[in-house]
Length: 104
Ligand code: SF4
Ligand code: F3S
Image 1 (cartoon, rainbow, N blue to C red):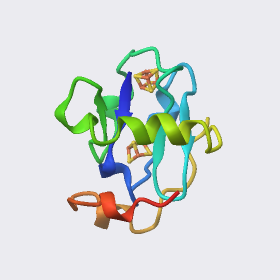
Image 2 (cartoon, rainbow, N blue to C red):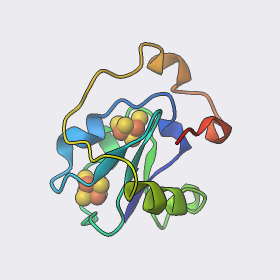
Image 3 (cartoon, rainbow, N blue to C red):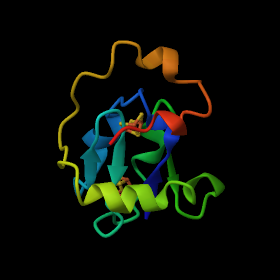
Image 4 (cartoon, protein in one colour):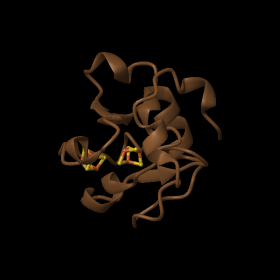
């Protein structure tokens, strides 16, 4: 499966949603997650994210976020269309250590 990591927080560009063939993204307040039981591992979302937030689960960055993706995919609503990203998304794009800003 692929995993959305903390780079998504407060960026939420949603370009990933537009390309996913199985619509397995779920939207929280300030980030999205992927449902690991629906993701077919196609990889097309990874290069689409301007914040480089999406990684395969084999990536070092995935481990800290895999459980969050699995948990919240079962609680947040499915998102199938790109909406309006936060107006300050670009300001958050290159910030590191955004994990503490996670909001369910
Ligand atoms: Fe969707 Fe493919 Fe990305 Fe999985 S890897 S979330 S199936 S676009
Ligand atoms: Fe987040 Fe990137 Fe998608 S910022 S909403 S994972 S395009």
